[in-house]
Image 1 (cartoon, rainbow, N blue to C red):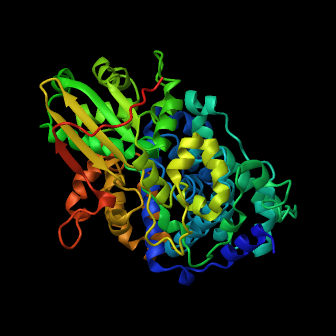
Image 2: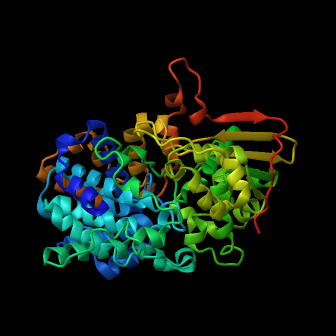
Length: 544
């Protein structure tokens, strides 16, 4: 049996009773988190232009609604991530649109989200040791759109195979110049979602897709993967739930900056929460130690930030400006990524004092976690060396060491995109914070508190309290209740518009106390550390 036939057939047969309750609850948190991202996108100037062109996120045609939901949720980097991919722009957007149009209840919606997650994550994981990852792996949304729609329609298994084969016939390959510098990023998820939905229509009309398109020598993995991992598509179907690998984005920005921003937010209060202008005069320099993953993404973004323009696509991947903003103001909001905040000379001056450093220990911790690509390297075994060398050179090959064995399941999955931030002041003081797993990222704290985190994220992005408070009831909602809940979640007139785009307070609401083990100690995987005095010696690498 081909890979598409096997994964599509499994997803077509997936029922709510076959999904563990804990997995359904993770999907429910994912839905609310993505609705917050959509609200923030709709309130942004780019989002308003998107809806002017294509209509609101809920409209009569579910294909158009799904595409608009995908676009609005993606471009501010508030969309959640999994092993592997930024999935929610299709795996939530499409089921939401079709559940609304077809009058499905809460449990049917969440089962469709899980089915879409599992198809999209697995195919993306099979190609994750390649040149595209994160938001640039737009091909993930082909599977997310097909699976999300066909599960809502209860389509037969053969149609899944045809639709997936048609969708992957011409997979997208984004151009980084457009992704980082222009407004086209608002269409990044919109386009592949539309392609996936078109493939569903074509399959329903009798057009056939190639069932072996993934694994064929002239197929998808041959073109999109340096080290193809076809076995990831079907490994542990029904037991190894990729939905449990989700990280929930609490800051606008690339996943690689989250821990550094968390540290900077804590340091702002460690230093007494002074006025931004006052603190700016005291900052001598700021060192950010991070994994090579963060360093390389920031280096690429910096090419677009040296001049007077501050394009959103580059700014969300930068480290210096978000860390400076969080340190000076105690928050990082969507508004901080736009003028006048992004042009503030005080913030830009402090950003100029931020030096990003590669910490090999943090890179090893990243590779030891499941997401974004540690699990793929374990699946690849020695063959993964080719991708490591392509991604980071011989130094990364040496740093990575032996890959270990793949996980039997993802109940304890982690995403350790850690950072250490050291602030040196002109009066001689030094303050340091370190966090291995960012708030909201896959790890022990998020596994235990994901519902709290996403409720506070949604509220912080202006969402109505009644929608957030109803999250525990989402799996049991009737069709009418779900329709009303979804409409309220996306109603721009509802909620606290004064709070829009400020998710940074989530960390204060879901307190650090919840990180503690029963004995009161802080586990290394979620450890805020404060030190004073001389900082450790670290390998510094100034960004060009």
